[in-house]
Length: 222
Length: 78
Ligand SMILES: [Zn+2]
Image (cartoon, rainbow over all chains, first blue to last red; front, side, top):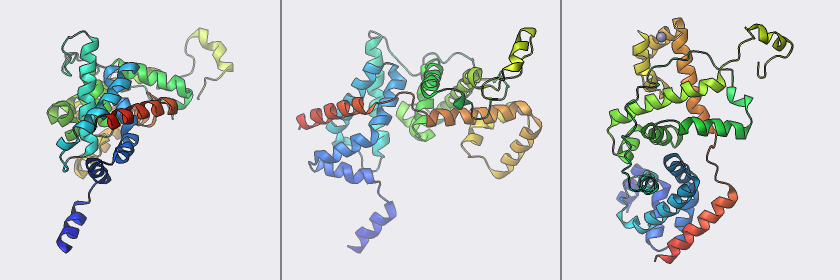
């Protein structure tokens, strides 16, 4: 008895594990809790990969259903969230393949470009530059910018930087090596930075004669 | 430290996984290299902006609809 308690105490069991055990014992409401906890993340990941709202909705439903059906295969020592993410990534890639009519989709494609591996724009950004746009303008800019990244960079950035997976978890989920994840992450971050710079850089005062009128109307945000 | 060496350490710097001596070398480089300072600050800001803004919003209505559909399918498969 005391041994069992001390082992449980040492391992600091993740709360998801208790929920998973309840689901396995036949309590569907425990799965309801797990779905509520992770549906936003799974939907975002599906959107990042498929870039299509309808597909993302389907992926989200299929991923949660598949996870439910395969719950017996889930190893209690892994994190439920990363296990679920892996299912969602695979479902998303399958959906993408279907949409591209059977063409193989690999996360290795489109990576030959050297674009953005070296920074070119060194203009500083305005302080809190995102505040110069309203919420929907900003979301539009961020969507357009990340959608322009090569697929294999976008997925790494989304999992690692947006959804908070570790480098190792990202590597495992995508079937990549840790160095491959690291090199993609750097290039993804630099390319996004470079592209966002267009919108966020500090506005400098008018320099051309045509800008003289602008002196009387200071630029927004400065 | 050169700008190329700085760039190789950028991710570790952002993820705060550099040792103290390397960190002080980096800080020294940034103090006299405006370009790398901008790259560091704006890259960090890029990540922060993506983390704190929802770009694929799941509206409460859509969320409820999808949630109900998932649970109905799960209940139906056992
Ligand atoms: Zn430099």
